[in-house]
Image 1 (cartoon, rainbow over the protein chains, first blue to last red):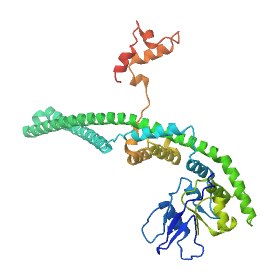
Image 2: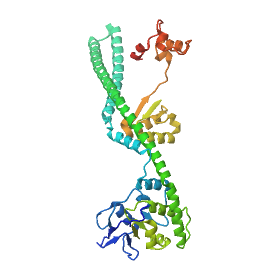
Image 3: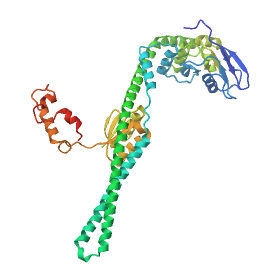
Amino acid sequence: MTAATPPPSFTLVLPDDTQLSGPVVDLRGRPTAPPRSALVRAVRAGGPVPEPAPAVLGSPPGPAHDHVGLLRTDRSFDRRAALAALAAARGVQTPHDPALATARRRLRAMSAAPLDTSELREARRRAAEAGSQTERLRERVATIRGRVTALRAANDDVDKRVLEDAEDSLAAATRRLSEVSTRRVAAGQRLALLEARARNARDDRERRLRLEDRIGNLERAQRDARVAAVAPAFAAARDRIATRVSTGGDTVSRSTALTGALAAARLAPPRAPLVVAPDVVALLGGVAAAADALAAPLLVR
Amino acid sequence: MLLVVTYSRRARETLRNACRAHEETVVRRFGRAALLRETEYGAFLACRLRERHAADVQIQRTEPFNEFADAPDSVREAAVAYEQRESPNTPYDRFAAGTDHPPSAAMRERDL
């Protein structure tokens, strides 16, 4: 553990430009100080932020900060997630790391095979339209042909002009049908071509999906390994913290969310300040004792 | 039926949720694919998936395969004969050689 080196200092810049520095900054005497949530935001944002928010200048937060950056008595603690983040912060390596890095690199290198779906959609629409148009015209041609046949059969009783008109419109409808049928064939071919292209693009997507699944599995395995790697140290640190907390006055169960968060905070390499509520400081026996117990820069608010 | 196949994690997740919420419309579920009933509601779900995930969703309309209507007699008979062969280790082409059954290469090249 890094308890031998003092925790890194940081500077808190309040909205009124007051600057406070140190490994520990205590805001308990300042009722106008920004709320805890604003301080946590400032720590995570790092560096200057748009006014009038507070700013924190110092080391950037590590991977565990999400889980240990705010220590309150009423907090929740996701043990698995926190231990995985803690292991990452401590640079724990797992046997899955190289495979995961390779898989992620391959995924990044994979182009997302841009597929113009609007083109395919338009082709589907055209093919459908050409299809129904052809059907309509085919029916129309059949109707007119029936009429022409009837007119021819009744040859003598029919005005020649009426028969000619009917034959003309049959010829026109037939011509139109052949045009539309040609268009239907073309639309069908175009759709088939685009669908074949989409099928090829799906092979790429299939490979991509398989790779994403592999990454998901590796991430789970990495997480398990990370949690397992720090679990013993975490259990020991939690026991130690629980002892400190109980000797500080109140008795706190060893398994509460707070002792878990405190233990994880203690084990995380000290970087950005942790925002600590005054009652937690009191439970640990004061600011000096808290700084000692957590071995991290603190912002008491 | 409508066969819906997904090609991304998000599309697969949407399909999974849709299947869970609309069991009456789902005939069968397989991992990242599902068979939807051919109702307007099945089409509605399919259209929604296509609308949301575009190229990550493939939708096919399936029909039952009738070997007596959809396959040539020679193909169907070859399949029956081959499944009834005496020696289970004979590859199809050796089995078909010297008979009237079509060679596999020829069948591969002919569309139904």
